[in-house]
Image (cartoon, rainbow, N blue to C red; front, side):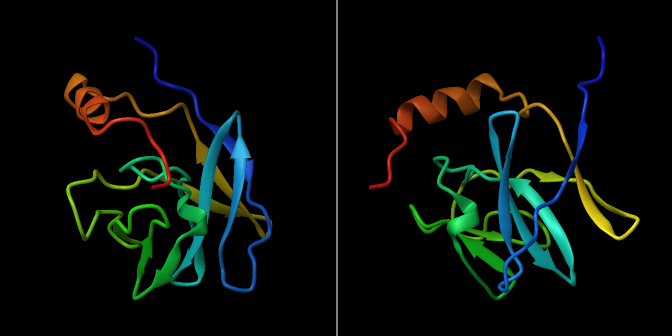
Length: 125
């Protein structure tokens, strides 16, 4: 079985609040500044796919704007519920520019898929 391929993507400029977002190959990514360097995670919340880039950032965490799940920006783990961790991506600086290595979506177990079906459709309510 071959390894999934990753692609190096140049990061967009971050706003004055140290964050940003981008879309690559149809997938959303969120960029946060942690310890003076960018952190890139999947842009969809692991709970119900809320837009993490639009979340409130404080106390070393991002709060999803849809259902208030809070994720630690150092460990990527959920602080407030049973949602899985955020999926982070390797970041490197080359010639003064920041890049992320992004790949295909993580495969999900059947148990995760069934839990998502039991929760119902994703919505912002």
